[in-house]
Length: 518
Ligand code: NDP
Image 1: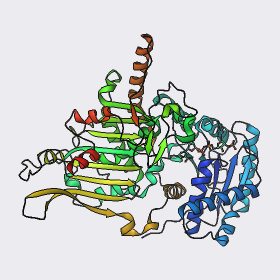
Image 2: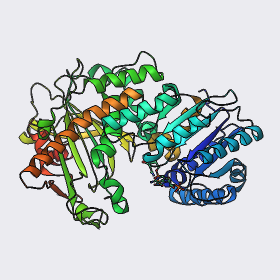
Image 3: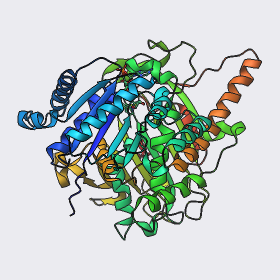
Image 4: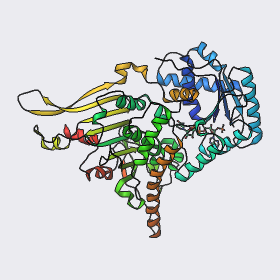
């Protein structure tokens, strides 16, 4: 195995006073440092409006790390390691839209480049809300930081959300690509940093046994579920402007679809992998906005119990307008018009306040042509052999098939073969997604980052749905009526409409099928 260690670089984190920086980015960097994957010429410069000294910033990060370690219940805090890491942390107070702050930033970067062997390599990480992405990048270019002044490389990592519809995503891309080259821009989707998401490609293309059956000849349909058990909690104000389709489907779920459905790339490199993902996204049949209800179901959770705790309904939550039409659940039947998948529906769904937190890709295989062992009629009619790629939690791969139950009767039952990451590789085997992605960005490997065309194609398909919903609301408004979304009690698997979406094709969501099969 080749050990990948980062080259020297200075990473500026915009929004360094925020949640993402404290909870994810700095812990991931600390962990990379712990594994000796960072260069001695690696430096972090936090940047935000909140006034702080270097020392106060270090203190904040130290507290965040302690909290993180306590949550993870990992090894005791290593003071020596922290001492060494904290020497590389600096902080600069400044605005996101004033020139003088950025001149001061450029000055500070020059000082740090002189003090540490960074080789003039710079990464700018936009970890702020997106309303300041444009001004930050404009000012970076204005003060000459879009290309390293001293001969190193410069990269820009852009957090989600990348736009809120096709037009705004295109506008942001146009803006960024006036100032930076595409190969400098790393659009992050942290799902791609997850071990199990990367394993989709290893599973499919590193083995000879699955790929031959990974197509319309053997696969009946595909179900992808990203279930969250929490409600919106205190983030209601933010969530209400976004909703499930923007927050989850446009980015994470479209990526899962692309990785599940893509053709083998000619090589495992950034352009080849992304070319194949783009081909899938392009093959997703655009829906006619006027037919949105035929393909997509949306809903909101109402009051209910999840894991023994009562969750107030979405519309009862503080910060949510009582007449909000923002969806907390969406299910979508996608058709992929290519040779491999034609006629194989991909049903994808995501929701908040569902019974469990789980992300699964379920490949549902065709049934045998004759059902001889039909001891329980209804069950055998409905239960497919299935392969589940469980992305989180309990990262695993589960193959379900029928077996004869021991005994004098010919009784058939579905059983499973499970591969569990933690059993195979130990509990500590799953590293945080950000760790992998930050290391990749330092190494200049953009395979697991989103290219411009991927973002825009995913937005294009999602924007058709958003347009359809906007038309519905407008038609109701003209008739003096208001839209109310279907409701599902918190702690259930979503609205009945989502079951109907599959029932129309003679299918069921996997958990109903398994329950019925018992
Ligand atoms: P925060 O709301 O914590 O914002 C980060 C920092 O940006 C704040 O500390 C604040 O710093 C500054 N800021 C906040 N609001 C504004 C505003 N309206 N205008 C300008 N600056 C503002 O966000 P997060 O850290 O949670 O997220 C940062 C980015 O990462 C977002 O784009 C988010 O969507 C994305 N993200 C976050 C995840 C998470 O788990 N938190 C997960 C995935 C993506 P100051 O006032 O000091 O300048």
